[in-house]
Image (cartoon, rainbow, N blue to C red):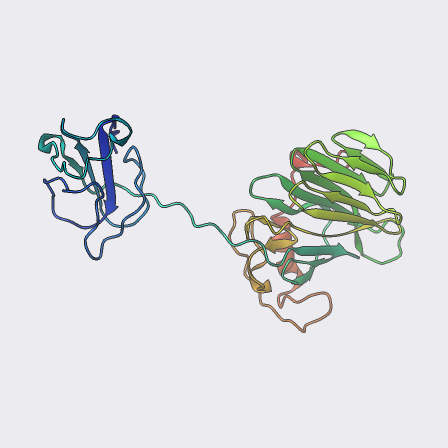
Length: 315
């Protein structure tokens, strides 16, 4: 679409319609679409408009008799003359509509516990028995990330069990990591104390605190909350994603946080497409997916973290 300069004595009328070519300028100052047409808000340079269908854009330049000064863009009531020679038309312009805003997140809580049992925002339960580092979730804007490292139980308490051992968290421009194997907590690359009662303010308004029970809670400036719960040689995760985030804008191996309460669409691939599952609500306490674990592993593998994207320095 070509650019059209609009000078201080020029007014522009925009609407979406299927109309025959119009050569006459309107008699009044406000153009009103005919029945069946939609009238979007005017766009000053005629390059953008909301609506659908064909775009009729006309430019009229006022005659010398128009009212001057602050009302230069508005003809005097008694003056309805328009410069016919200045009328221009453009047809069949491409209209690009912005995506409608998504509703806020509804199911915003999550949990990863035990060996590990995963619970998504809408309550979908499944297991992650793999080893390595996985993106539990991340925001599409990149300002919120939770990575978790898991490995086989090194104490031999549970045969074949996989346990969460370390976390890498990003909130805003801050990176926090914790590794239970050395009780090591770092904030933006600096090691800090894990003593109960310790508290650290983040530059952007977020915070990191250590509770009396030793659990570590990370709060983002937007209201996201991630708690790392210390156990006997392993860690669990729980928390919630801020309801101020648009539904569907946070997802990962722990599922999607969206605006509905439907667990069947919680498993989302990194490209944003849904990973199909059969949902069986009463199958068991820890697994509500009808397919075998090998099928679930196919989804989890999509969220394995490449070495160069790892947020856990101790790994």
